[in-house]
Image (cartoon, rainbow, N blue to C red; front, side, top):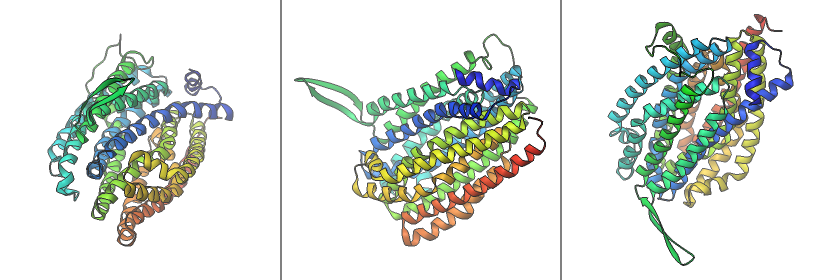
Length: 473
């Protein structure tokens, strides 16, 4: 792969022209964006299939979705502490050290995710009541939540393998497997959500089996697709990826103090930040819940729809983490600055276009997810409010990826949760009193713009410090 040759230039100390840096950034970003697209497509599939079941089923998923993001995000952030160390060691040409980090990362991921799963299952019963859900949706919400949290060990290994492959510059395999996962999700969801279907084709009756499990089927189908992807991703990482494969090597899976300490330094700010941000999103859900079932469903579906818009930002952010991480590990601090600015600029440009498209096609996007007219109309309105924030949202997403690659996560985490708790939550509560769900999304638009501005300022400050100590021509 061309990008694989180019990324080796970083750790080999070879000079990179502007065109080479841009080509490398794009070549790593595109597969990462496709992987994000596949993940988001799965959310669309779940939302659109469950949306056909009615407003109550849609609201049951929307009620616990932010709580699930909390568990997923905390586990994903934990794995980043090991993935970033791999990028630094690969950049420093220490492949054996990278393998040591991989082994310990597997152990830590399993231990952490099993503990998280136990906690999640323990709170699954009362959680919908805590969030203010009604009896009509609480039972299904609990079923949906408990299936996902019970599968956290598998999902966490998927995060770990994908993160490490991306950090060594392999964006192709995660994107292919994400596409496969999306296809499997379609099949599994169709078979598990809906009852048996009978079609007449050419005078013959064709029967497609279905379990008719509804919301529970949506959770089981997605988890099954994730499990298949996790198995293949871990297999490729441990047996095929040249820099990290464990076959034919020897080493302990026991966690050591030095690797664990560095993982904690990187992961804890990210984990705490994600927990606090998801706590804020749960608070937003509690603000939305009194607005009614239509508002709950419209909010959840609009969040899913908006993810298509910011998908490129997270893909470019993944590429920035790999490029900046390897540049930092190789001691090429000027290259850190150049890749940082280039990736953030690219992310803002792409997400500006996506924002325009989302504003224009908002009604069509919502109609794909739900046939319920009231939900569709309200969701389209709030999507058009949010579209204006996409350029600055991109700045915060990609700049965060740059900071992760540098191992500088503490201040970035503080900025993230400070922005959402000090700006979005109080403003959403205030505006919801008079504007309903539209007020909640107006607050989100204002907060994301503010967040982008402070991240841009932080990026300029940090890269200037690095440039002052750079030894890279």
